[in-house]
Image 1 (spheres, rainbow over the protein chains, first blue to last red):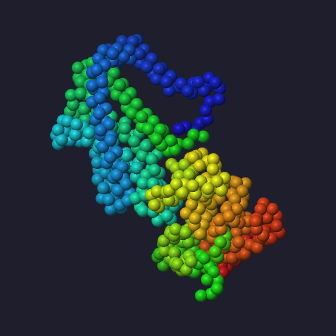
Image 2: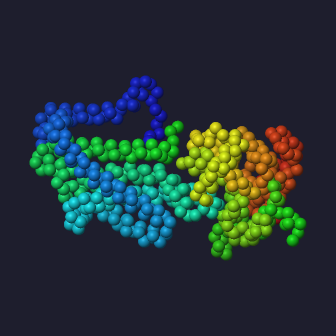
Image 3: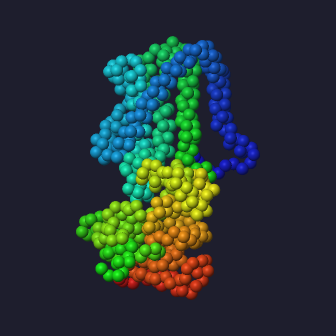
Length: 263
Length: 262
């Protein structure tokens, strides 16, 4: 991402390679040190060691139950979001009328804080999956619409001329030119959306749930089991990271041409 | 009908275009009259922004001229035609398809499929362009020169009678550019086509073409139509021919000291 050149010496290269890991290690060590030396009570800020032991105090089956509950909602919401956003984007590119009609509505939905709407959705749809999935979908689909439409609109005019010069049907212009061209954009949208999907699922759990990692964190906090809440939080962050990476792996495996070129 | 019009393959009569149709809007191109004969190689040179590409798009049927008319084989051009192939500036390959699939793309795009015979034809064309061993490569694995060869091969797939080339070599370095120019001439000898070749390189135009249309600055109009009577096949030695030097001088004179447009 940065324009600076890579360090040349062996030590410099080593430092460059391990700098991110080193940063985390130093941070965690400092954290532990502050807690131990300052005698900070566990219910204010638990030491990393206390978080680790709290993690292992919870049975693995309980973790998996909570994990599955969150992951399930996040992935269902994410999938629904893809199913809505991509056809919607195609429709909006192909029809100026549809674009004009829906764009303001999309902006309104995106500008409304989902956290504030979540309780209302629960009232409307009940405390089960449909409302959780809807909350997740609402929070994830806007970045997907934006990235897909942007990609399709940025298709170089010469590629469109190639299609026109062949007098190809318009749906093939969409499927064989605009959509493939938008793939890198769609994936950057997917990377944003997948992390938002976890946030959406957690928001839904905060409002109404009896399992899930979000529920687990809230529940632990209300019983002042702060190390346990931290363990849940870190677990959640790790899952989010894993999902983000999975989207990258899918792109690398299925669409290697769409990755930025390495020089 | 005059004899010239009868033998003309591509015929431009008083062709002009303005992108904005309000009465005082400037013309992008104005009053172009040109007859291109069958299997003739015509180059168009002119300063950037003179409307060369606009002219090409009007012949391609991608743009309908606001003034005058273009006809091919006595049929007015009102939409893109099957017998016209276009080679774009910077190759314009699809980065998600390998070389062979890029070459076959016109069929896939127009009809939704291609046959084994089509694949065989694509292989032959790739072989002719010296690209056989690259057919499974992705475009970004190829040099700029090779990419543009693929672009030419793709334009030849539907075996067009007319090849329109829009500054096809302008993104290439000088050496690659000269080589690919000679290769284009070789292809043109093997599979004769009527070629309209847009360029801003005077040397390239003289080296390749039978006739050269010299265009003025915007609004682009005809400054001169020059016949290039250099012997073929043209080679790297052609550049030393005194006629070559004289012709490039003439064109340079037109472009740098523009006379009143004809």
